[in-house]
Image 1 (cartoon, helix red, strand yellow):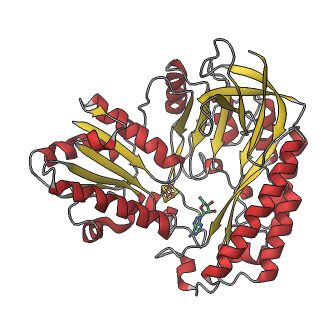
Image 2 (tube, protein in one colour; image 1 turned 180 degrees about the vertical axis):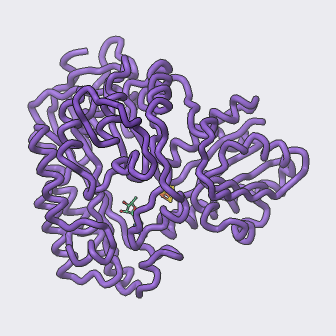
Length: 449
Ligand code: 5AD
Ligand code: SF4
């Protein structure tokens, strides 16, 4: 069948969609990016905030409306909303053919066969860890930047977060399987690999992944630095990244490993969530601002030019104006290169759902805008420091905003826009001299190919 996949949500979902696509292609289906041509559309859903969930459900209902004209058209949902709603998803989208949660992707080919032959609807929301390598190993050819899962699930219990209930228990994959996959994606053309997990620093914590007699060449004792070290040695890997991390587990060894391993980039996305110790405590984040400050200081101690990005939530239940101002001040102190700001959204079943959502929507909008404005001003200031310097850029292709230009990223994960020259190709590493800066993009000219 001709299928297309629409993905909402985080990198985990992006990666799941890729793996699903590759699995379906292996089973004789054909992927198309033109949704109207597809005989089967799968929506990979996100439930992190209420808006994300309603967007995905709205999309599913729209797709199902096509069934009136095309009775054989198949619509399926996968991912976090399915895992949250289970059978109830059929109440929201009554014409849905199948719904598969976050842990049954490997069964999709079989499920699609049943639907094709007139069966259904099928809802599969297994709770067991999906060990099946079939479900997470497949990649497309020609990706310059590839994602590789290293740990599934999340067992932190941040008071606002629905992820632990939809992504389940933590399970770390064996290092040898990860390295095999990294070798495979590099053979398929990847120059940059991002190791993925809800919290990569939990790698190997719940289930032991290193044998007792393993000796790391650089003497690392912690599981994640060891994994970075073995991945770094894969021939052909130019850049290694990881997402996402947690401030409570940023140790000195981890910072040292980041600086010692040549492919590991000088950037980290380290969610802060709030700059108020009182709010952090109620969020049950397991660190305070001092711990965050120390974590960042150790990165900066080992790596010059280190860049840091973050996530912040405004309007958490009980957040006062003064606590919000503390967040503003702390963000300025940390000099974030970029920040994703979210308005708090109550998620059913989370601890914070028991508390009154007492910051009004108007107030959340105001705080959100203030932090965005602050970040724009700060991003501009930080990026202007780069003007006149030369940076290494991994060429990703034609710029999204300007067809005449090309774009790529620095090791510090900044987007760089430049004029294409000669026989420039996607995947090239070039040196760009920076000539001007915006809060989230820098511009320049290629110096060296
Ligand atoms: N409301 C608003 N933002 C949330 N996030 C997670 N849960 C919620 C919620 N209930 C944000 C956090 C997280 C990012 C992926 O989404 O900042 O780091
Ligand atoms: Fe959305 Fe979280 Fe699921 Fe990612 S893991 S898709 S952010 S709910």
